[in-house]
Image (cartoon, rainbow, N blue to C red; front, side, top):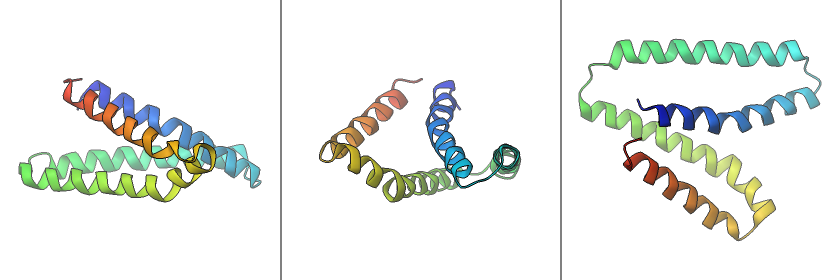
Length: 114
């Protein structure tokens, strides 16, 4: 996995995590609860990654491609369900163009070998 991919995933998750944490705090959750929840998610995610690599590290390319396609579809579904409606409230007709620009940039970065 490239450094660019790891950085992109990290950077893309920071605003989402901050938004969720702020929402939990507004809902009356303690700082300990919010930090504990995010720490638990980080640990479970890390262990899941380790298990996935251990179990599927030597899987055929077609299986890995299917898994990546499924994960990509899940991310697109999450974006369509949660983030695009919120973006539309602020930027209206520019939402589609901004989304397209983001996908084109991501595609260009992935093809640059980064």
